[in-house]
Structures are given as C-alpha cells and as structure tokens.
Length: 128
Image 1 (cartoon, rainbow, N blue to C red):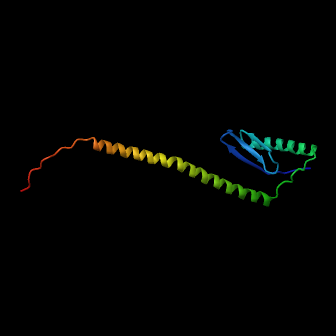
Image 2 (cartoon, helix red, strand yellow):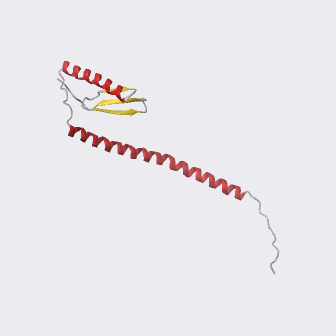
Image 3 (cartoon, rainbow, N blue to C red):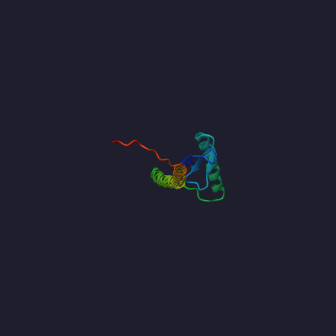
C-alpha cells in the first residue's frame, strides 16, 4: 500500500539542522543538514515506522487530507504568532530594565559631576 504523508520541515537553531516531522505518525522525526536531506531521512524513518506498526499489528494512520493539512497549518501559524509574542514580551522585559538602569546611571553621573563642580561669582560691569 502506498502512503503519502505530510512532512513539516523547520530549521533547528539548537540542533543546527533541519528537522522533518511526519505529521500523521507520532514521534516520526528525522533531521538533516539540508531540507532535502531531512525529507529523505524522514521518508526512511516513516517507512520503518509503518513497517513496525504493521508487524506489531498497530493501526497505521491514514495520510491527511488537504483540508486537514490546511487546518494544521492554521493551528501552526497561531502557535508561531503566540511564540513570537512571547519572545517579544520576554525581550522587552529583559531589555527595557537595562535601558532604564543605563539611563539612571548616566543621569546620576551627570548630576554627580554637576554637584562636584565649584561655584564662582563673576562681576559684570554695571550698565548705567
């Protein structure tokens, strides 16, 4: 029987490799230095996944329909947007306090140098 499964490929900064997730097959993930290599490796891992499932008389999930894939893509986009929002919020929470601390430090140095100066009096000729 021929199966045509959906594969999501992403870059993993942590692994410094492309990861290919076979959406219909739980835990079926492969990697590679290029997208093409990750997909080729995913094909092999998926083939083995299906063979083992058949040998163990476990159900083999059917391939996704195009509608299912679109729904999954929408869900992924929502997750990506939320992850981006969280990353931005985290960055703001880390950066803004540093900027404020730097500003306060610079202001206190300016005030310190102003306060540490010496006062003089100057006379101006009268303007009569």
